[in-house]
Length: 373
Image (cartoon, rainbow, N blue to C red):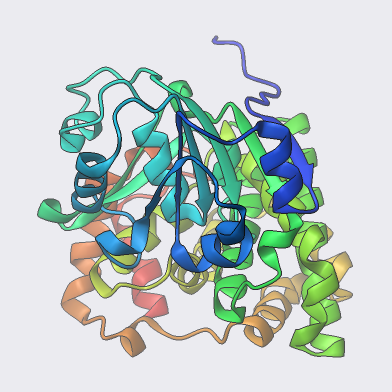
């Protein structure tokens, strides 16, 4: 039997209160490339007159990252840079992981395993949302436009060398982005806690992340959504811990099932996860209600102050105060889509489905979509 990885912490994690402290300490300059969004760069770095190259992702398309967007950005990148600095949400970080490799284009060859995945440049990742945890994972997910799906690759060459948490960058986060990204972090923590590839050490991070996120949401429910301001550092940490939690144990069916739906109907990643989340948990419970899921449910019920039998109901009530949940048909999904989605999950998402709490076949996946329709 192969030895299980008890805990793996790859990037060194740094925290700064301000962007200026970060720039001074890392001596940003010639040979560096910052990949970010203009609305992040201008207010936080614009007046520093940094002597490095800068690329704004939104000039190459909006929304989540795709192979076509990545190819276009790579063509315009200066090729002599030695450090890639990604400042943004999951889109930016997924792109920068690819840009730090020795062989980048054609990107489809990377996803098909036809090109070796080897690190070519130092990689520094700085999150500006409190959700993806991508700064501490080795996964890059792209929409593969010609194939109408999303796919991820995971390789140790794509770990950042430094993950940097800067509280200042979360001050201007729009509420919808906060909501979808923090729910994404919650799903990371829950899926990794239930993964058969998790360990007591990884679960420490899962459970602490769940605790911080749910207590933050409860404070916002009580005091109003604007109460999130002073809690942003907690959400940033929780997102980071959730990223560590799933870095080896992986995410599972919630992510796998959200991909074809999110890709086809252009639903933000955290929101598409939330639509699927409770459906997967109910399905797991119908198959196996003891073991780690019983421990997890008791832990969440204690935080929410409810009976464990009503834990998903109460959890959904709380999450609905942050982001109202919609049924699949409200996004335009048709009944015909459900079979197509289930088929896509079984064909394309084996990497994620291998981390499920219990095994799910095509019929179970289809039945979850049907229940959420």
